[in-house]
Length: 129
Length: 372
Image (spheres, rainbow over the protein chains, first blue to last red):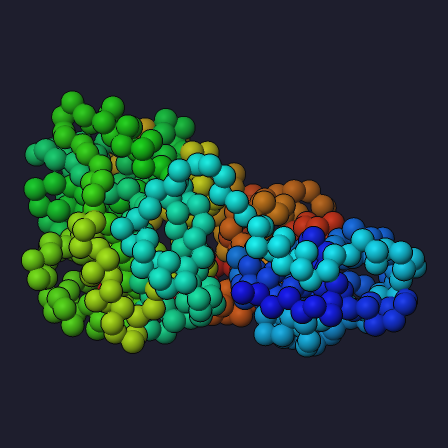
């Protein structure tokens, strides 16, 4: 069973969102997603200081077998990217909720967070998918 | 990831795949393992260092019986077959009247019959084609209850020889019939990974037991379709439907070597489908050629990515692309206009709204290690 921590929020496109404070979130892909992708060999990170709109394709994860887009879970500015993934993209497989985090953003509108789903809802979705 | 309602065929190793934690995917009408618990990278590396066991029972095995089977089949391919020695194997292509490839096939002189291994997605088409073309002169049938296993890697020979010592005497592209504990096997020293190894054909009802026997050796791991694809790409081998198809000729695909050994003989006499076109391409060249490609950034570039010259004109396309676990960087193959086939040529590749640099290189990416 993939790990789906209760303290995080999720999107239907398999990203997790950690709400750091009212205006700041940290984002990565779920354990379910990394298991589905298998060995991740490359990530194209979002651009620092760039503004993205919710739903924008903001990063790309390449595994041995396929390419997957990561969609921005909310609108805002990229304030941090996990540069260690450039040399060690496998951190996403090893520790998807910790060292495998992908980016942090400052929100333009915190009401975007209302549309995120909770762990229970995500678990159901990840099983049915 | 739903498979819909299409009823998929299962191979005789299905229970073994599930037991070993396989992730099953639909492929050419079969439910097949794309990977097991260890993952594609591990299966790939294990096959290069030791040995991987692949279930390729979805592939078509076709038997052609009749005194003139080889010479009849020769009329359908651009190379010589009539002089194939007993228990020798040859890789060739069935061509259409335009010189395109109907399928790439392994042909074996198996004594009282000729045995073909054809691609899974093509097998019914090829069977019908052969029956139409040769059916009045030979008996042609699908070996529908025979499984096919591929044991690949530097430790493959040691593993298999533990049970069937005589396989050590086979060399690359030779074959034989063997009996082990009452099981009849047709084994060839060949494969699709660039490594030394074997393909073993045996009755469906013995396949699982024999696979389990091979897996008893620590040097062997099960490997799925994912590793099979990354291994063949490193070896520069074509995947039918991607790198070759009915619109690509063997000359464009860089498979002229399978014509060349008898090109003079063929050029004078041959009358296989598309012979005129292929003969002309051998003489005057082709507008495009298959080449190896290495993306210059770390992003893998996948099939379908357009290739550009410095004037931003599209001069080619990637047909297979992925990550090379051996080289630890992305690799690809594709077709480029003949002005750009020189190794070292730098091209652009347009993907995801961005331009990447990609270099033309010689194939294969990882040297073949066949047992000659």
